[in-house]
Each structure stands twice: as structure tokens, then as C-alpha cells.
Image 1: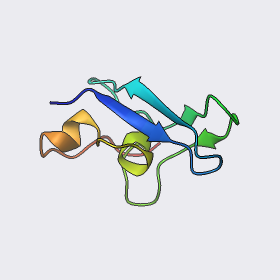
Image 2 (image 1 turned 135 degrees about the vertical axis):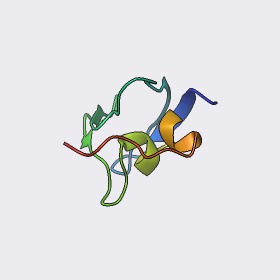
Image 3 (image 1 turned 120 degrees about the vertical axis):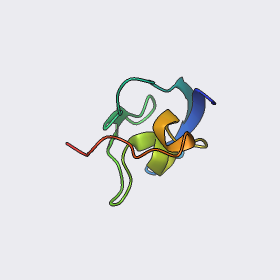
Length: 69
């Protein structure tokens, strides 16, 4: 399982490699450059599944991720 993923802000294009949580979904992420608050796209369970290079750990394991807030 891959636990690091590079998340890309759709507003400014900034990229940052982050450690993904293994025990919870990350529904929000604040871009370190422009401060845009990202949330999952419709149909995605978390910000990593929507904006990052690697999907979240539950999805990597073939499981459903958490429900959205």
C-alpha cells in the first residue's frame, strides 16, 4: 500500500506530497499556496481520490472509503 500521495490544487496548480491517513478519510485540504479549501468531487470519497496521484488506502485495498460528511 502506498501511503504518500502528491495532491494538486485545481485553483493554482500547487503540488505537495502528503502522508495519507490510514484510519480516517480526509474530506478537506487547504492548499499550502493559495489557501483554497478543497473538498472531494462528486462521487469521490476524499480529497486524495479527487486531486492526488494515489487514491486513499481503503480504495487501494479495494474497499469502499468513508461516507462524505
